[in-house]
Amino acid sequence: MSTRVGVLGATGAVGQRLIQLLVPHPEFEIAALTASSSSAGRTYRDAAKWRVDTPIPDDVADITVVGTDPDEVPDDVDLLFSSLPSDVGASVEPAFVEEGYVVSSNSSNGRMDDDVPLTIPEINADHLDLIEVQRDNRGWDGALLKNPNCSTITMVPTLAALDEFGLERVHVSTLQAVSGAGYSGVTSMEIIDNVIPHIGGEADKMETESRKLLGSFDGAGIELHGADVSASCNRVPTLDGHLENVWADLADDPDPAAVAEAFRSYPSIDLHSSPEQLIEVFEEFDRPQPRLDRNLGGGMAVSAGGIETTSNGIQYNCLAHNTMRGAAGASILNGELLLEEGYL
Ligand SMILES: NC(=O)C1=CN([C@@H]2O[C@H](COP(=O)(O)OP(=O)(O)OC[C@H]3O[C@@H](n4cnc5c(N)ncnc54)[C@H](OP(=O)(O)O)[C@@H]3O)[C@@H](O)[C@H]2O)C=CC1
Ligand SMILES: N[C@@H](CC(=O)OP(=O)(O)O)C(=O)O
Image 1 (cartoon, protein in one colour):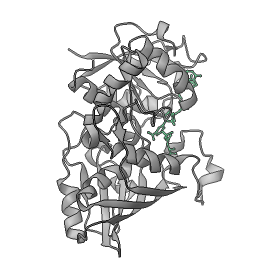
Image 2 (tube, rainbow, N blue to C red):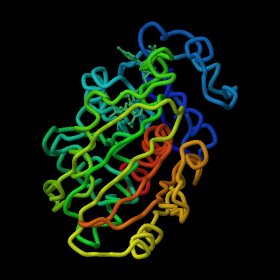
Image 3 (cartoon, rainbow, N blue to C red):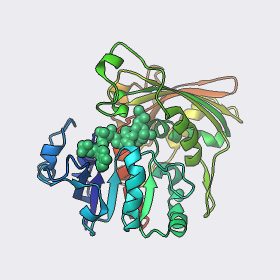
């Protein structure tokens, strides 16, 4: 039997990707769509300016959008995917969880809270049980689970694979696609023929979220990974796919072939949205590239290439699809983990 799910912020860019992925999903069935008061009461077809590159699904188009309020969502909805602006998420997500809903959220609010699990299922599925601490702390019946920022998700699987060589320090410089800023985030006049060498708050998210994801959970809390992470974030005129240049200082001295093998052999997980090969490795030095490689593994794989030794460790490039692996796909994968682990 399918799990009944809802989408909070269903009319937005990430909300539309969530719907695209949820309609054919074998375990989930869409039962509620919410948005702001200006969309509530309208059909989804009317309220959402559909911009995904597949047609708007017929059975979703006629659903009436409701307000983002626990009283408006049916009680028999077991799981909510949240793609709300973070300030809205900060006030609304706890209200849903207090009412007993389980929320898998893509929004950045609360990601670093001590009792909020931040997970990439292939990397730190064991952190999910932080939900028990959250329930004790907050008296909640429901649960709040977060996926990380899209740039963080792109590099963390490779860092997890490098940890066997003693990960000590990371420098990363990003080339981030415009879809990461949402449809109205960057105007064409700002980005065509241009690169913007700053994305507000992004470097800080990469530096902190990565250490939580790679950290260890002892049943009471997360101890952050000890590696020092420094990031510099740039917006470039690609549509989808964040490319990143990474320099990792390591305690050991692996050659590029050993690093490539560590990437290739890093295990995936047996969940519907997880790709068979989590990290695809290119031998060519000019790959991965956003346009060519962002859809690997249905948009859920991470790819890496250009692996070279440095005086302190290793240098490489990595890439992931920012609205699939980095946003909607990440939330759905977390939903699959919640289901698998009996939280629904
Ligand atoms: N993991 C990642 O790195 C990524 C995360 N994101 C995050 O996902 C979230 C959504 O991004 P995106 O889809 O681009 O944003 P959009 O602006 O495209 O969509 C926002 C959605 O939230 C709804 N909404 C806005 N204000 C309110 C309100 N006051 N009350 C209830 N609903 C409201 C909108 O409804 P309406 O149409 O009625 O206005 C719409 O459905 C953001 O937090 C963003 O930072 C985005 C990309 C990647
Ligand atoms: N800031 C990211 C996307 C995003 O919305 O991130 P977050 O989920 O951390 O707010 C980008 O611009 O590509």
